[in-house]
Image 1 (cartoon, rainbow over the protein chains, first blue to last red):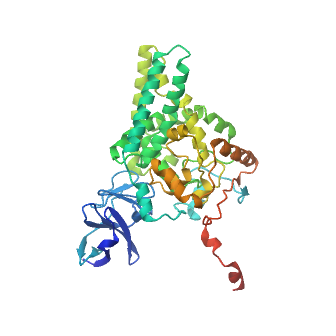
Image 2: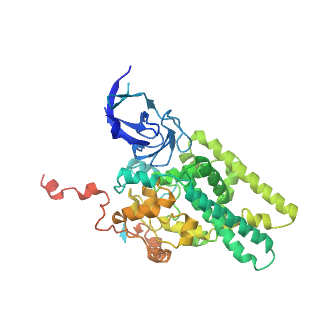
Image 3: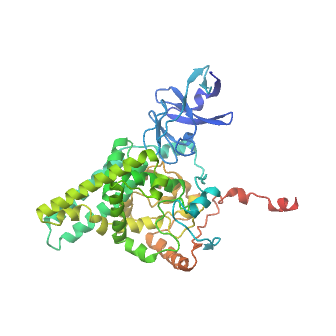
Length: 104
Length: 365
């Protein structure tokens, strides 16, 4: 069942960047792509507990700050060692300048 | 200089120290990071192909040029400078290429990192799959005994072994049999502890490919009745390793173990430009460990930015070795002895939460 929550304002995330969003004891990462679209994934790397929001966004890739593991943040796909498990992604919509994610 | 509590270290990755590291929270711990604004860090982390393509072209041209010199001057003393250059490029600079491309930071383009990573791994006689995972562990648990798979000098230090490392003999003797064992499909318990099960077959396949190339090299050498193929492929791991050991040993030797602050267990050393080219700026090693996302070419800038929060860098390799030598000698008798890095007054302290404790108030309660 859908559970939309407000994650941040559009201007909170720079283009080709990521920020952290905590909600209900969970951590998410909110991305703004170079094409100005928004995406959301779990906030921690699936390899080890590192905040992806401290990582680097390059095109459609988020690179984990701890071991440089890479994911496609649009699909959650792990792109090779040291990450082997895909990242969970969440639906996103923008309404009235706010980025909403469905964490349901 | 300092002494920690007396313990006998067990460097196995599946032994008593491993259990203790996990139980005490040293394994996969939260590590100290100097505060750097996100915007600045983003700029430092930016990738580009340019610097690494330039350096790799120089590297390949120098390798091929010195190899041509070896072949041309084979049988005369003029071969010596070419062997010297080729050996260091093959047996030492491959380590930094392996390292940076393994992190995926050297080039922006992924495939370029992978190609150089595999070539450098071969030069070093390192299984590219195994070492990718061991290095990830090294970054998670840097110099945590029982967890870190890449502790170069264990305590008490074996100084003969450390000295022989400069010749490459021990590493050769260690690396080649490991590749052979892995090529036959056997991974050790330590290796299995850090290579995920789904990746283990890849490690075996990689070892087999390395063996194929060595077998082909030996076959060519026999067919030609010449040592040249082996001097160019394989043996540089012996005669060209010294620079890798000279620079690499300084990364952590003699410093604290079992601390979660890279400022205390890792060393930054200023080096000459040639060594920095060979080493790809890994002399800024505290900076690299604290922020592994920053490419080698941006490390000097990062160093300038955070040095107020780091121990003063050693001004030279000579200085660093002179500083650590008495520590190693003392560790022969007291393995808990180590070189305590002094943080400058401008630095945040190690484990700030301890420093912030109001002991007087706590005692009054």
